[in-house]
Length: 400
Image 1 (cartoon, one colour):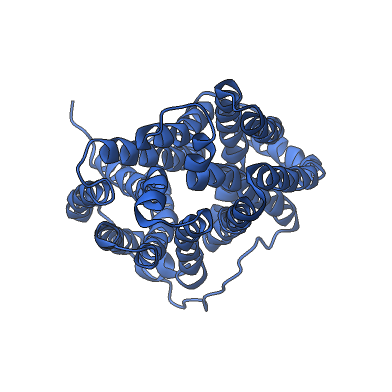
Image 2: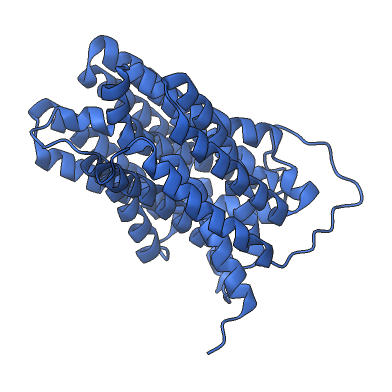
């Protein structure tokens, strides 16, 4: 059976998106090794983690109109090239500040790839149900994030140079995909008059705006909880009676996102408002279980926490991506950049504050404050679910 060219192009874009987010998460299981080999503190690990997020935010702020100007294909190739350069820089880094610069550059490449590939995936979607393109993009994104820590941990544990080999290997794979990118057929026709780039792009429609902010804050909570594990999993696991390894740390992070991916795939037909409620409740339960794991030094509580956060991440993030994807198509693609800009704040400030609190007051105090903030955000989101449910019902009625 002949494979259609559109499917090949779609698969290449899937790899671009997957590698873009995989590269950002590759370092997560290595932070414990950095801390030991470079003699750095938990706060400095937090700096390295959020340096990447500052790069993403920088990209979303100043390059959010790149796809409109140059077309998604050029931006994808530019983002993938920068990703390769950043991975090589990470492999050569010899101290925390060089690592922070490399992570900042990876963040820029991730921002470029996330926005451009998602637009490309929507345009090149080769299947009948075009409305599901946004949900599938969400699944690919989460899968890539989940694969990163697992690949990084395994490569680190089975190489003589754990702080460089993972980067070299993923850079080589990324180079192969970059060489295949010209196979994507796309002729960009820039608009006659390109609107001046705006940093902040929210929906004009009043109903869409009421849905936009709860969705963005939902993403903020999901990203924050996952980032807490991604940045500090090594710190959490070190307090438990387990043999320490980069593979174990990476697996604990990856399992969360693999569960999230499976949840999104299996429950994509669940009513969006119900999915969001169940997701945030599961995330809150996961935070409580993580506190109990640290309090009791119990592997069982840690396992339940990973399971609950994985389920919650998938259930809550999927409807958020779904609604924002529809808004971006109807009004302005830059809405998606602003959505990510708000969501990624959860990967910066909570992680930075948590790292500082751990160094000064301990893990328990840090987790308690973090969980309280997630609870407050969830209460605000729940108070706006009536509007979201009404919009979801209208969309379902229109599709039936």
